[in-house]
Image (cartoon, rainbow, N blue to C red; front, side, top):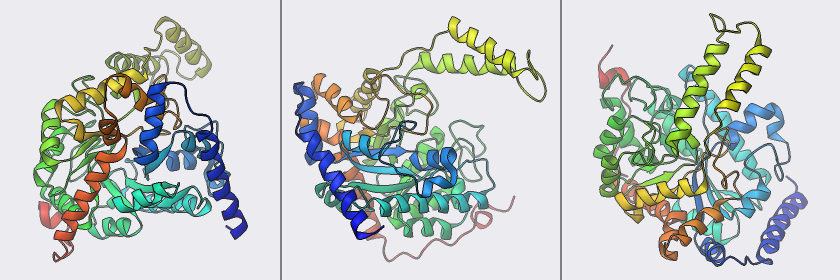
Length: 424
C-alpha cells in the first residue's frame, strides 16, 4: 500500500469514529455502553471472516475492498459502528482435510489476516499481548489476533505449533468438529476419554509459548483434562452455557466452576443452536427432513429431482417455522455464566461469518453495543460490563504471558505422538 493510500485509510477510520461520536444516543443504557467501549476494548473471541472470504470470493479476497460487504456479517464500516477494539480472527480450515493439507491452508489463512492488516493500517494492527491490545485500542485501531481452530491443524507436530505462534497466532482450539488422534471432540464419537499424553503435552507447550488453550468444540472430558493440566488460564473462544441450552458444544455448570478455579473465561457465542434448545431441535428435524427428501447418491423421496426436493422442503418450512432466537437469549447465557462461574469469567465470542443464521438483534459486527446495553438494562454495573466486553480476556492473556515468562528456561517440546502415546 502506498503512503497516500495508508493515509487515506487512516483518515477514513478517524472520520468514521468522529461521525459516530457526533450523534450521541438518546438511550441511557446505550450511552453507558458506548462510554465503556471507549475505554475498555470490546474483544470478540471468534470471527470466521477470513475463511468466509476465501470460500465466497476465492482469489479476489487478496485485493477486494473490505469497507462495505453487505453479503457478509463483517466489514470495516460495521466493525467501527460496533466499536470493536480487539478481534481474534479464526484461521479455521476444514477438519476433515488431511492434516498436512490443513497446515498448508492454515498458513494461507494466516497470510490473509496479515495481508488485511497490512492493507488497512489505519484500521487494524496485529497484536499478541494484552499490552498490544490496550495500546492499539487507545490509538483508535482494532487489535487483530489469530486463533487456530482445530488441533488437526498442527499435524501432530510441535514445530508447526511454534511456527503458528511465531506468525502471530494467539490460541489453539484443541479440536474442531471431529475427534483427532490426541483429543476427543464434543460432536464426534470419543476415542480417548479426554486428552492423550501427547494432547497434554500440547497444552504444556501452549503454556510455554504464551499461547491460549481454547476449549470450544472439545468433549467435556478434554475440558476437564486441559483444565487440570494447564498452568495458565484457558478460554472458550465461542461457547455458551449448557445450563441454558443442553448442547454438547456448550459448557456445563460443573466445568464452569472449574473455569473459575483456573481463572479462565467463557466467551459466549451467538450461534443459534448453542443458544436455544428449541432452535437446536428444529434444526435437527429440518436436517433429517432434508435428508429424507433428497439424499444422494443412495436414496431419498426425490432423489435425482432437486427441484421437487426443494419445493417439498419449502412446504416443510411453512409448516415448521424457525424458532426465533434473540439478543436477550444470548444475554441469558452471559447471566448464567456469570452466576455460576463469576463475573470475572465471561466474555463474548460471536462466531460471525462462521454461521448461516444469527439471533435477532445480533446480525452483524455492528451489534456489540446493543448487547452491552442489554446487560446494563438488566442491572449490570459499568465495571462488570467492562469485564465482559474485554477486561476478562485481557486478564487471561496477561495470565498466560506470566506463565510463559516463568517457563522460559524450559526446552521446546519435541516428542512425537507415537513416542508419547505409544505406537498404534
